[in-house]
Length: 305
Ligand SMILES: *Cc1c(COP(=O)(O)O)cnc(C)c1O
Image 1 (cartoon, rainbow, N blue to C red):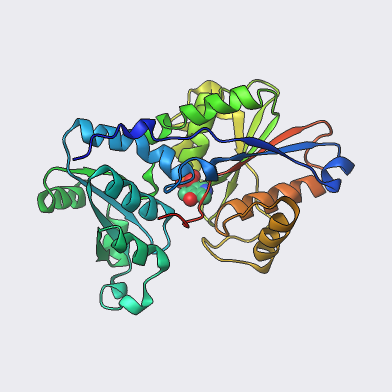
Image 2: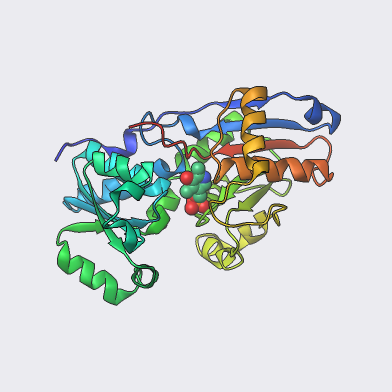
């Protein structure tokens, strides 16, 4: 196995100001933290979640990484690339047994994961729902001895710890932010940021959900936080009705406007929704004058190889 210290493979990313007439009218200042630029091949929040887990797997002498995801999962893509570069075998358990026999229906994510030598195994919906149960995990550990298991979406306590470096950068780059917007899938990124940013009284972290069901995530997120910080964040109720991964015309429009105005590419599942909902909040005067808003670009552009 190659001896790369996985937690050292990380680039500092800029916080850049976004200048726009609408922000001037509303008397707010807006910045974007460009975590899409944090790693040439595994960009975005998924790399922060993986890096300490991979260091731990190396430490334990595991030669295989096993994880779970849907056909378009950024986490599957990131694990395949990271595993290959660090010399791990990788196995991805993918939701959707129908894909096993139908390669022509594979998403670009799956095609690339396989190109990066990830072994793909397909589960039906029922099996997939049971994937975190002790019985299922035991079965997997029997099939793959010496493997390191990473949960769906990559969120566990090492993943949360992985956000310290990004939080430290933000504290240096924009210590006086007042409103921080971040897209939420499992909530690991939000939890990691709140935990390490330790928001002050005049600072609030706002999570933008990306799926219909998100109330249950409140406990998942707070589980990683000291009670003192339960009030340091909240979910903004989305204006767009949510179906995970559904790409509404308003999202496509947001992506194209953002590209034109700021020359920054957003992904349709997470960051474009986050920007859209931020703009809605702004329009409805939910952001006070003089706010210093920090938008987190969590990546999700599975371009790199
Ligand atoms: C996975 C992902 C998220 C959600 O991260 P969680 O830690 O699961 O909440 C947000 N943005 C992008 C681009 C992602 O790929």
